[in-house]
Image 1 (tube, helix red, strand yellow):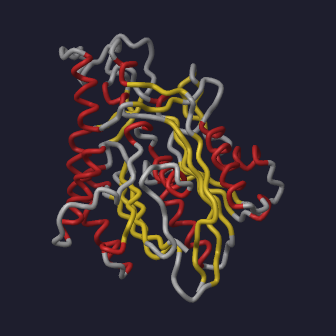
Image 2 (cartoon, helix red, strand yellow; image 1 turned 90 degrees about the vertical axis):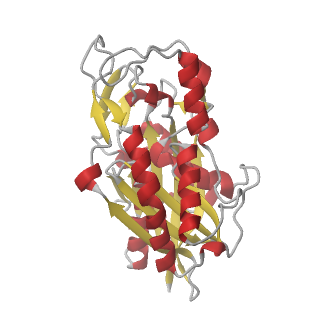
Image 3 (tube, helix red, strand yellow; image 1 turned 180 degrees about the vertical axis):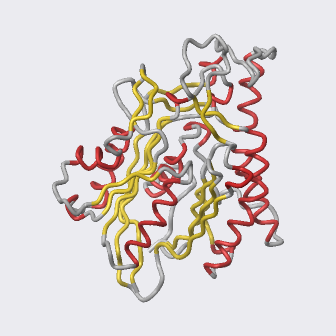
Amino acid sequence: MINSIIIGSGKYLPTLKISNEHFLTSTFYDSQGERLAKPNQDIVATLQKITEIRERRYLEPGLMTSDMAYFAATEALEASEIDKESLDYIIVAHNFGDILPDNIRVDTCPTIAARVKHKLGISNPYTIAYDLPFGCPGWVQGMIQANYYIKSGDAKRIMVIGAENLSRISDPHDMDCMIFSDGAGAVILEAKEQQEPVGMINHLTRSDTLEHAHLLTMGTSYNKDYPDDTLFLKMNGRKLYEYAIKTVPPTLKTCIDRSGIPLEKIKKVLIHQANAKMDHNILDRLFQLYGLGPAPADLMPMSIQELGNNSVATVPILYDMVAKNSMKGHSFITGEYALFASVGAGMNINAFVYKHP
């Protein structure tokens, strides 16, 4: 039996730490272009109470998304101790490509994956590098694709990267900008011949585009006096929250049930984090679907308080932090199961069950 196992990971966290106090002097407007009457101090306090975000990371002016992806990739290669030329694929999940600080335009030519392969100095023409835009669930979907390549016998080693620069695509006059952050995470999957199933056990993806395709979109600034027609990331936060807490729990349950693993054996849930209240609600509702009480407090590692919502980078960064014992109270133990999951633009939801080898 061919199994897909993670043999190394890495991350890049930008050095610019932006606290909530940064937004006390901002000028916020609603979607109709009316200035918000509530004092900024109250706006910031409410956001922190709901999301638990106290701080986020912004990419340094001299760097771009491909740089973050490269830094995370380099760290993953060092951790795995493999020859970079032995990689069969480099899959980079992102949504906005490289964005200059003073020129907010999506740049994906060449692809971010091609840029990462170039920066790594890989000469092997059969190391196939491509991008995967799939909203916040992009990295999880990249892992699912990589698993297919490995189990089909097409590949032995694949690097999957999630990298995102949301700070430069966020409207400074939309209070939702306080949620967004930057970062990158990478893992290397390797084929392992073993009769006992380990690594990626089962997965599930769904896309609800008929009614929910436009909960996250691009639009002009809420400030009618903004100097140009630059497009910024916009989201219908209330509808997105309602969709997530209604749809994600049963989707996760289906994935778990198809894996044949009892919920009680899953010791870690690594889930995309855009709103801590939403994540706790999702997990509690999942347990309710099994007729169980509240989820254990140590089941879901949380990074949103210090790192904000860094989209496709959230889950691989979480994995790297737990794998390297840099998140207090959390670790992976051989033989235990973890659930990886994400939800985001599309709307898309995906998950996979993983057994640590």
